[in-house]
Image (cartoon, rainbow, N blue to C red; front, side):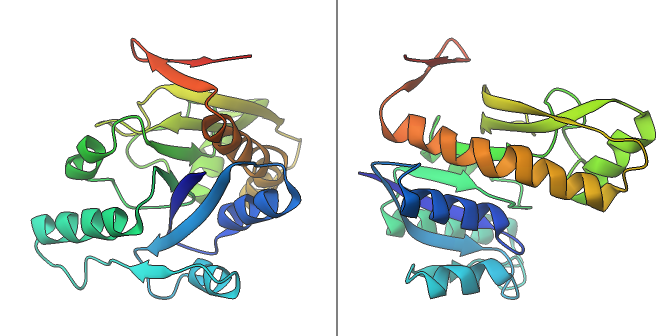
Length: 208
């Protein structure tokens, strides 16, 4: 059974998609053992509590020194006993200390088709605003492993989503979540949980 620690910052819709997929059997051989947020106000913590999942909040406000925050975050993950760390709408830049402790064991969902609209500054609604400003016809979401860069790790899954005429950023954000994020993040977890994913020479290999 693959033990998951899910890191969140806001409402937790991707967390809910994971929990629902485990509940209905879309994801097998996996369970969420802890939900960690960098915000005490994150509704995702309430979702976790309702599901009976232990939670923790590790915020920079409580650890003003960067190194102390990094160590506290690593400790919270290690205490959970998680095999895989899932960044599900997590707005924290993962410290190198944590990346080194979980090599190829941290995945992130990004609301665009990497390498487009990714990297420093591209997060949340701003990604979709940039997509609309550029006038592209297709966007989507990407699940990738986390390395020392920003959105630079090996790509695991991607799913395209149509950009419609007249879309607002919020409308596009919701469609990307519904049609891509909530589908490929659980699928990625299921693939990993069932031993079908490996990283070879910096690229993801998925077994049949």
